[in-house]
Amino acid sequence: MLTSRRLSPALAGLLISLLALAISAAAAAAAPITVNLRVEGSSTTLFEGPIVTSAETIETSSSGGPHPCDYASNGPSGGFENGGTASGTPTSALHDAAVANGLTFDAKWFGSGPSNGNPGDFFVSVVGSDANGGPPTFPSWGYAVSYTTASVGGCQIALAPGSEVLWAYNYFNLAHLLSLSGPSSVNAGTPFTVHVADGRTGEPISGAAIGVLNAGTTTTIPSSPSTDSNGNASITLTGARTLTLKATEPNSVRSNGLAVCVHAGNDGSCGTTVAGGSSTPPTTKSSSQAAGGVVAQILGLINGRVYSRRFAPRVLRGIVKVGPGGTLRQVRIRLHRRVGHRCFNFSGSRARFVRAARCAPAAFFSVGSAESFSYLLPARLARGRYAFDIQAVDGSGRVTALVGGVSHVVFRVK
Image (tube, rainbow, N blue to C red):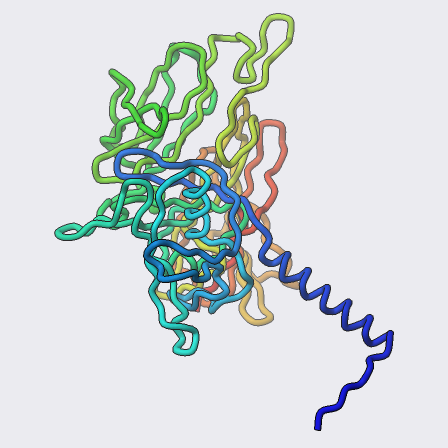
């Protein structure tokens, strides 16, 4: 027979404190985060910029009711951890942007429940006016995180603050995800060079056109050449203004927007100094960096991913975004490996791993001063737990902070 017993004040107080801590921890785990989202439709850029997202329950016209999109409830796949702490995801970020900007959004739910090991996920079918199609090419929506295509659904990846998320229509029929880099501040009438590459591989893309983004539509700059075999094009802009450039190519997803501040000599705009020493700070910033700032980002690796030896990373890649008025002095990286109680650090001078005494962190080594880099390792990585970091040093000697999932990525090779 069950009996009731009054708790002592001390025990009751302890239980209340523990419950409060549990509630606080759960709330903190699911706290909203800000990520950088880009949504490329069939003919226009539907959204590009920061978006606040969190673990969510989503209901659409085709979902058959509300379902979780929080990473913790959506199941294992493709080497990712089975559930975990509730978090914002690529699909929740897309859903939040669609709602905030009045875009049509629909997604179908697939899955039969946790009991059979397949809790389920959403399959995005409509964003804006672009709906998944049928044969022969089956155009549909797909996504990448840090230019890496995932083998799991959009609710099955936990995003970190500052994560770069791309959703694109006809994603699986296009060969390249374009990445555009170049100066953030230029002088009117003076030619400057932009570079277009495949964001997944770093391969330079030839034949890409450079255009100006206006109200979602990219219009090619008249008389501007397409990119050459090295992925470069020389551009000349006129008139002091601020604009966003994008690269396009018929067989590719449009590039990220490159914010460019155009000044007329030392007119005090874009961080320039006029006679007398006064200056006007740049008026624009990109979606992921402060004006005049420098942001470092790892490409091609997803935080928490588990790779097989066969598909272990061989190329370390990254990009540095320099805000208007900012300068870049150096980019440096480090790679640390741990196997059990043994630790190894990759040496840039020796081009190999060396044993680390007391598991001391690896030293950074320079990979140059370009805004994008690729570093080829001598061989595929062996099994172990890895931490890869990228730092950028600006013209004043300031070093960028390490941000989890953005410039600090931890992954495993089994």
